[in-house]
Image: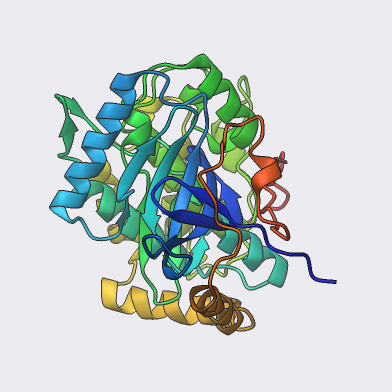
Length: 366
């Protein structure tokens, strides 16, 4: 027997339909925006319900709002930035346009499960596209403070079914004040996905982005989580490594450049990573020849189509049905404070479970 879906209205005339995932800022929901005074859906939105331990001061919230306004005014393509920030007495919300697609975290997990691993060239094309977006925004500053991403985990990278790639939450973590509660919670959630300086409770810097980019490529090409413990010999980490993606060459020079890429991104010593985003991009284009944008977009579209051939049409039908059906039981805004959020989630929601397990050790030789 199908359970009745309980719609939940939040400020701004939005109704949460399904919980999608969690990331470093909060819990993400697919929502619909209603026509004023009616229960008629107009369009989908993605709404992020912000963790209560973030933005503990008005200044942090104001800086973030200023950054989002700047990015939206500039109109930087493919930066997935909130259109609106909403704060009530008990809750904080980020309101995004809705994208039909997957996060890179979902894609890598699905690729591993279906044994359709991300091709070598596509992995580096994704990394180059992310780097290009970061480079475009590297000149942004908020109240005299230069911004960088700071938290390029795969749940902050989105890919739609038309081959577009988006970077979510650019600059927000670089604007947050030191917050031990937030750092402890992120370490618990992400583990080794975080750069060593974050785990050491040090300030993240622009070179922290390179660690994330190297980790993303490592995860796509090897199918494993990168493993390094303080006190280990970092250089020996790469003496044996296996890849699930076919390498375009096994020439010693090519393999050396590939291992050096990982050493210049995953190094626990910040000063031994790439100097800046331009240095990173130049290295990637010189040695790994990622595709130009048009070819990359076609390749990503084809890969997404192959990986999700059995779900794209089904998702589209579900989304259209939500827009064509009046939303029942829409009342005044409910309290979404962390203590009672779960009881308001629509019945039938499936929460994506984040893998928190790390793969320690590298299992085979080249």
